[in-house]
Length: 420
Image (tube, rainbow, N blue to C red):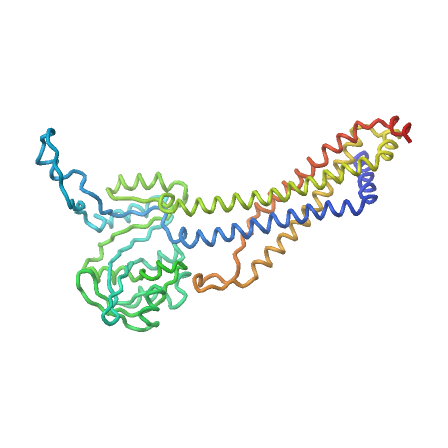
């Protein structure tokens, strides 16, 4: 312990003798750490915001019945002569039921599955809103409102009105913002709706939905399951989609295959449905880490150059230290202590400055009509950025000090003193 204390005091004395260079090296580490944390926090906060627009509104697994081509054409059943070729035009898709057969038992089974975090049934119906002589096509999604709020943060996307009213008020609807603007309606207004089957209804507007994706808001509306089933003239067991949230997102592809086979329905997992968004997030994260690490490496080279210059300028001191009994290992330890001191102090200060910069960005107003729930720039305060930055700073500065320190440890004091 006494040996460490002595070596550390010598290291501090050398740093004070080269105070300006030491401060420059420390500021380099501080700046690199602060920018690393700020950049990653902001970029990943932005990633979370952008992905949330889609991924947070997407089920991990979706069960439905897909309209598909007939697996075996009629011509194959009645014309078996392989020596001839038959051409059939305008082949229609295989007729399948749009609703999920035995949906009540499937919902009950999924609720008992320990891998499932929650389920939200849905019914979709195509409708037309009439403006004079113009019909606007749209889709009304019948939802279990409490389940949608819990699993998909549905309330955050309804800036006007209360989504619970869609469940409590009969014959009510939540319009997409784009449709509401075209119809020029407000909360409490009545809108006429015509289904694809020709049935006409009048629904009360109880909310305005805004996802942040303009094209989606122009064609999408929401209502309760009961209201949508009424539009389709179906009973309460009619369910066309089952949206599933899992406890482990990574198991979605395998569970989608399992559920499709088990319940005899089509299934789509979130990775397949939104592969492009995950790819974009990964690319942005890689770029952020690459830039941040580059800053730390540049700071490391700065420390390396400063310690190199310090060794050349302190050859006399190194010779005296060795002549008075300090070993080469002791001299090496002194310069490594210098590098680590710069790295630790610069790293701690950099973490604090990075946190302050991140907080400052988090307070900058960011108001846009496309994102009604966002009020300031998004920042991610994940502790792993701070830990990664600190560890990398210490490792970088250690390596930057190791090689100059190794060079100082082999200095021959006799040659230096004789040269003087």
